[in-house]
Length: 170
Image 1 (cartoon, rainbow, N blue to C red):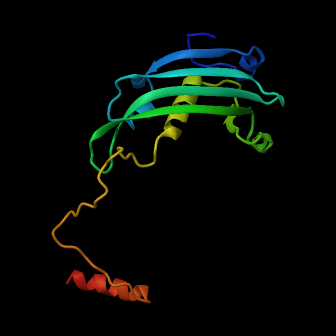
Image 2 (image 1 turned 90 degrees about the vertical axis):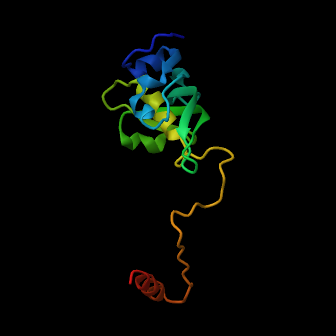
Image 3 (image 1 turned 135 degrees about the vertical axis):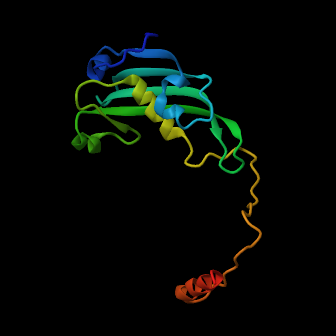
């Protein structure tokens, strides 16, 4: 297991040697992830292991943990979301090999024979983020942006609803 994370590796050579890397990365050093965060203070701890599984599939096991600061889309307040990933990636050279991966494997396309472990870790953390960041315990009531509320009566015809909305503008 090595602490130094190289910029690029040959994943097939790493798998043959059963190499692994462990350490931490400052969140500031992950620009795509950092752009989604309310704060880039802190770091991400990771462990990656290259190898082959019992059926001979060349794989990369990615484990990472971080406390990410997101902005709640309901309250607009920052909150800490602990994120932990544990993913097994099957290494493929072209998209046609994806269908041959066993169930439970996500494909990692390595077309040019080299991969950036940092980019793989960052991709997996981005995929682990919620689509809409909501702070635990955020209030569920709806906030009206104006004094007036529009009530539309449900009818059999959607065009009748559109007609009633048009009357509001006059």
